[in-house]
Image 1 (cartoon, rainbow, N blue to C red):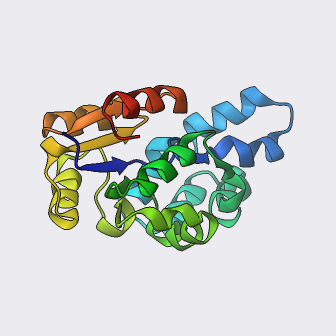
Image 2 (cartoon, helix red, strand yellow):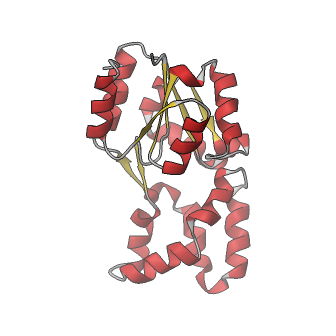
Length: 201
């Protein structure tokens, strides 16, 4: 029986993608944009921010290695809000349904510490969570098992009676290995069906 639901945020509830920003910079040259996002401002590089490195420092170090792309790299920090396109269709409605039923709601998010205040101001539904564990603040990012253990201690939940929802298979696998019930998010329709099957909505 599920007694608590733990959400990931990005690409589950929040529509975040660097491409929203860099399409403005690269225009129709999609291939050049993808090359930049895979070889310069890659997710591996960005994950350092998720694990606690200040974004300004991470950007400065990368720009020093790629001076010809310094302006594009600085945009990652300076134009951060442009990477957001609102919410994932249907997902927040499901969060609202769980909230209305009194389900204890929590979140574990890989998110830079220095950008978290922006997220809180942009998405009022984050107030439905009793607590949110932010990787950049903790200096510990998914899928490290320790972040799930820390969340259980802080939230006062047990893995075996908690449902963890994430879009990344590695994060889902890490939670499952610790005993969580899990849902690999691929869209709101699939999540709705799972929540209904579990009697949560």
